[in-house]
Image 1 (tube, helix red, strand yellow):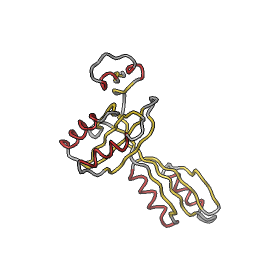
Image 2: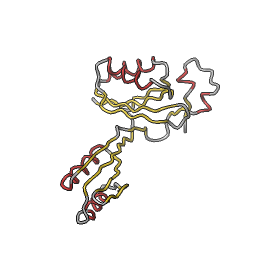
Image 3: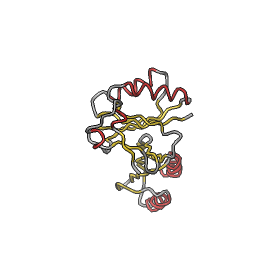
Image 4: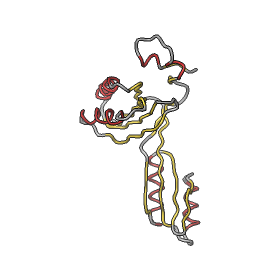
Length: 184
């Protein structure tokens, strides 16, 4: 079963290594790992995808909370969630084939982000299957290079989310509870 965690951590050196090492030490392979700044200064957001059963996922979640700089862990696997991937695809495009490639790009709701005399770079976002579909359609033209991100995930609708005002003076004994407010 594919498990997806969204982990909010302090933006400090070595935190990503500690998170990935925790998963590795327990014998699980990380299928996708995406890291970037969160909406809050000093906080990074890790989206971690791996194969695990629900019991193992619960143990991993509990162990993630034991790491010093981990502020919040959400298993979004069973929640209504939007998942997205990003890919940049460089495809050979001669003067004769360029219009055909650009029509295919439009069909997949992708966009051309760079034009060179002999190639195009295409940006596409969406489900992994959509990206793979575009890649297969473009292969006859000559795919020169592909760069894909890992999975990004965000729970749909209004949900629990950290706010900077909630962290400034909460009296909760649990630092995670202190960093959470409810959005309605």
